[in-house]
Image 1 (cartoon, one colour):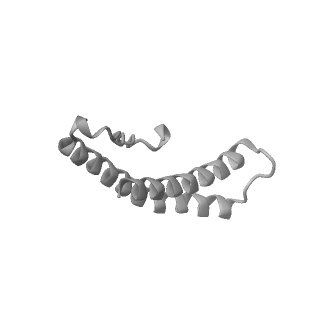
Image 2 (cartoon, helix red, strand yellow; image 1 turned 135 degrees about the vertical axis):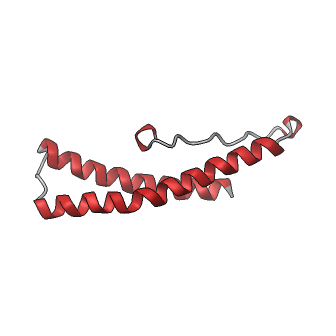
Length: 90
């Protein structure tokens, strides 16, 4: 279950990072600047997807905490590490 959540987080985060990269190109003028309409649509898409990404990250972190409470060191299985809640730290 933790693996599935982490895969979902990775997909959503990568999509968000591509959108941020698109905005950075518009600001920095790299390659070709975005038009104002496309810039607004990209900002809106980022704002729309961020709450869903944060919800999945919080769910994964609560799952990690629950696993830590149930963990027995004799099992020899590594525990998943919680993810940062700041998107810039991902």
